[in-house]
Length: 210
Image (cartoon, rainbow, N blue to C red; front, side):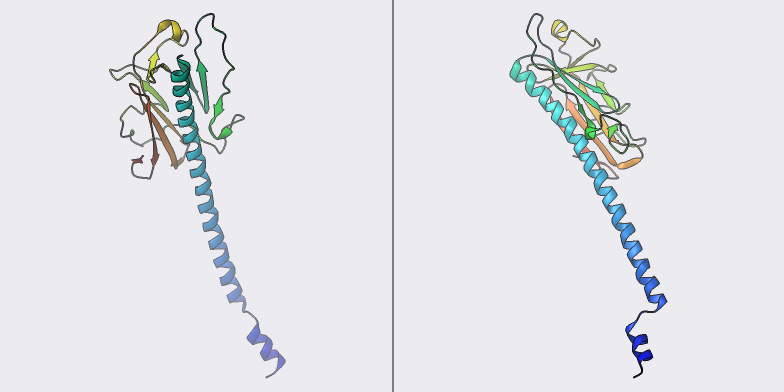
């Protein structure tokens, strides 16, 4: 066998090289898409967990300290827990705010409070007219909320002086989060006002799953 024939048998044709390169590119594109989806889902789950963590922290502080504890959800991505100390009482250390996905410098590529157009309300049915939907069971608009010493989530239309007002109207809450335009990142957290019970939901493409 001549040397030229050996080289022809041991080498690759241009068509073969192009086919292999095409397969590699397709597999790489699939890997990138899957990785991006995984990262987005991770961020959505993390943001949901941060909301739940702060809600539970506020409730536990209210019960253990026997003080009302206010929780503020400030768009686009801030959560602030504040203990309402009594007048004349020496306040404890301030609680640092928490930002969804730790995005205190911005929300690009991260989750924020957001209602996805066209998605239904959660099975709890507390409302989805806004990303932070707070309402009394008997009706009402947006309310400032706090956890009481009994662990209930209650609200008042005033934004200060909870310890003086002593409002005991239970408020059901729905907090919707996600990355705008990416429905797979839709998450929801609900709170039953009377008991303070927290539930979490994720959108699976067809319905909310707990």
